[in-house]
Image 1 (cartoon, rainbow, N blue to C red):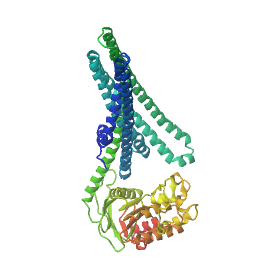
Image 2 (image 1 turned 30 degrees about the vertical axis):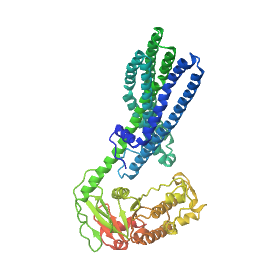
Image 3 (image 1 turned 30 degrees about the horizontal axis):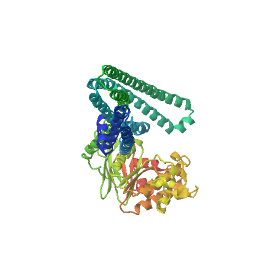
Image 4 (image 1 turned 90 degrees about the vertical axis):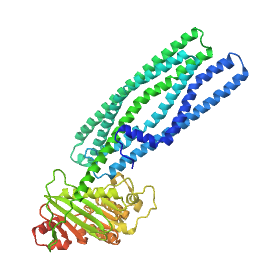
Length: 590
C-alpha cells in the first residue's frame, strides 16, 4: 500500500506524482484550448485589418479557414484535456477510497472515535473532494497560460496596456489567494460535521430495531436532527466564505478590466493603435474575465480539496499509529514469553505470575508457522497468562467465563489474520454480516455470477444445505440488505459456509451456532470437524461453549474468572475433581 501521508499537502503531492501520466497531457491540452481561446480576439483583429478594411477577398477566405482551424484545435483541446483531467480525478478518487477502506478493514485497532459512518463519509465524500484537485490543477495551469498569452499579445499590440495587465493581474491573484486558508478551515469543519452526521445515522440505523422496540424514535430523531443541523450550519458557513471569495475575485477582476479598458481607450484616442489592434485588445480584455474568474473559483475549490485531503491523511495516520503501537506492544510481549507452568494429571495449567498492567491487557503474541498456530502470553486478568498451540489437523475450543479475555484474544487473532491474508488465516466474527445479493455470492464473495461452485461438503458442514431446501432458487436465492429476509440461525449458517468455503490454513470461529437448535448445532459441529480434519494442513480454533463442538475438539482451553486455566480434552475436564473443573462444568452445561 502507499506510504502514509503526514498531511493534506503531502497527500495531494503524492496524488499528483502518481497521476502525472494523466495530469501532464491534460494540462497541456487544456492549455492549448485556453491559448486558442486567447487568440480568438487576436484573429478577429487580424481579419479586420487584413481582409475587411482593405476589402480583400483572398485574405478573407484565408482568414475564414484560419479561424476554422483555430476553433477546431480549441474544441479538441478542451475535449481531450477534460477527459485526461477527469480520468485522473476518477482514478485518484478510486485509489483513495481503496486505500482508506483497506486501512480500516485491515486494522485491528481502528480508533474508537472512528465509527463506521465517519469512515464511510471520509472514503466517499472526502475522497471525491480531494481528487477534485486534478480538475483544479489542469484548469488552473491552462488559465495562467491563457493570461500569459493575453499579456504577451497586449505587450506586442501596445506595451503600455500590456504593462498594466502584467502588474495588475498578479496583484489581483495575490489578493484573491489570501482568504484561501480560511476557506480550507471552513471546508474542513463542514466535512467533519458531515462525518459526525454520518456516524450518528450509522449508529441509529444499526440499532433501529432496538430503538423502535423501546419507543425511542423521538429521541433518535432529536439526536440526528442536532447533528444534521450542525452539518447544515457548517455547510452554510463554507458556502458563505466561498461566496465571499468568489465575490472578491469578481471585484478584483472588474477593477483590472476597467484599468485595461481605460488605458486602451486613451491610447486609441491618441492614435497610437489601429482599429484591428483595438478590437484585439478589447476582445483580449473580455477574454481575461474567464481565466480570472476560473482562478478565483479554483482557489476556493482547492481549499476544500486541501481540507478533505487533511482529513484523509489524519485518518490514515491515526490508524497507522494505532497499529504501530499495537505491534510494538505485541513484540515487547513476545520477547518476555515464559512457560505457562506445570500441568497436573487433571490437565490444569497454572499461569505464570506477571506484574499488574495499567489500562487494557497487552495483546498475546500470535505465531503461525509450519506446525500450526501458537498463542503466547495471553493475558486473562489477575496477573495470569495462558499459552497454547493448535497444530495443523487439530481443532481447539476456547471457553472463557468473562468476555474481556476472549475479546483480547480475538483482537490479536484478527490483527494477525489481516497481516497474513485470507489464504493463511481467517477470523469469522460472531456478528453476522450479509450483503445484498444471493446466498451464492455471500458464500463465495463473488458478485454477478450464477455458476461459481460451492462444494457439497461446505454446504453440509455449515448446515446451509437445509436452508437451500427451504428457499426458492437454492444458492441463487436473493438475500436482502443485511440478510433481513433470513432468520438469525440462517444468517449464521451462511456466514459459516462463507468461512469454510474460503478454506484458510487457520480458521477462527467465534460462537458460530448460537442461533440454531441443538440438533442442528450437533450436525454442524460434526460436519465442521470432519471437513477441517480432512485436510492435514488446516487448524481450527473455535471460541464457544457449545457442548457439541467441545466434545469434538482435540483440545479445550478453559479460562475461568479466577484461578488457573484448564487445558485438556472435554471429557477429561468434565471428570476433573477440583473447583476450577466445577466452574467448567457449569460454563458448558446446557
